[in-house]
Length: 575
Image (cartoon, rainbow, N blue to C red):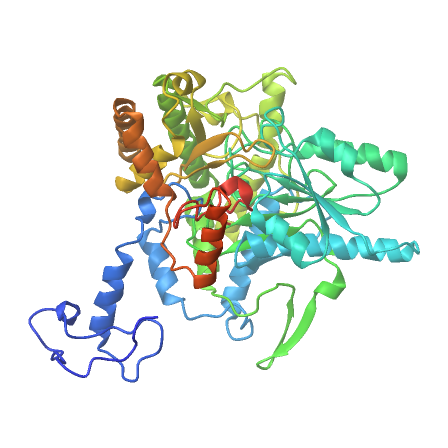
């Protein structure tokens, strides 16, 4: 560990013509608190310089997390950053705003007349998913106890493409995770046929994802709901659905495509809770998420705490207590400032840019897209007009709800139907003409390219793009399909057409560079990419390696394969 003692010599005066970080005779402590402090501007400059080594958020197309706030949103964030959302009695206006957001989202997600939706802001979708899972587990336990049955073996269904937060829920709260294989046939998402084969009386619920982090596909919520209907008819066992709409919750309701004509939200009686991340396509910076239950009866009472705190009484059903409140205020600002049409314009523009990127990559002949949002929408399951109408109903109810909130401060109680959504709007092609999904472009080398250039590794494209400041991850598809690796770009609101043009140009130039290099050059580059920090080995480890070498066994060199291939561990994506 580096020495942490402060320099006792060469102290540079604070007031100098240049900032003191450039004075080489002053040590900066890193791992222990210093005995004496340092001037604020010195520490600021030091931290600023170190943080320059981070990637640029605007060019980080690996993440779903929003990196842009307009000026008014930034002012609201700064003015309210000291407010604690847990202090409801002290900040009643902020609590009221949080409740309004829950109401707006409940309407956006198709709350039905007569239901009394409840919900809460969370730190992110991870917390929201855990709360949704806990509620399903508690209700399953209550039903089983009432029937005099065992409650010791709960299980929950999810696809192998599930985000790590879903797996954490199962592990942390002692629920068997039945992780079902995905395939190209199922669009690398939860396979409804496998759901049918794996549910039983101990299944507390099914996690269905509205927007896979791998390819952006929506999982078929309505199809899975019908399978569970059939199972209930045969067995009498009722199994609910929680929709993880971390990204899709702020995309599908606003797009012309919707979810391709299929229901996904509270219009399906089996969908009992939905979560979304406000800090993704809700257009707020980290961290805020949302959990909404279709009716208060689906939130078990033993998960609700009545708190007597700082002179007030409040109800709490979150895993966190103290948490920032500024993001909730910015969320409400966005909902009212943008309104339905503003959000629609944002996500339609993101989808349009994603289609341009997809088609540009495939036009090179070097890449093929695993995502489908640039492919024409299928029309074989119903007529185009019926599909459009089904996709628009919830959207128009949400539009009316948002308009009502903005103009009167109140939300409409019941559904309001609107006309069918067009495939074109003012002669501009909309997402309705294409496969529904998130603005995500997942792509890989084309088969012909791989045959012609077998020595080029796809991970090298990611590395060379990083040298141009782009963060474009390369990683394996979910277990079972992990022989295929993909590069993935998440198109967010800050992706302008000019920036998109630059990205396409850089991908093309990087690929051309690799095509012009020989196998030896690329092997050196790939070796550097695999190496992590060199760790000094213990003496006993060195002796063990020598012993293995003596036995003629292959030994990894220091730094080789330090990091596991992503397929070998849990796939992490931002939530």
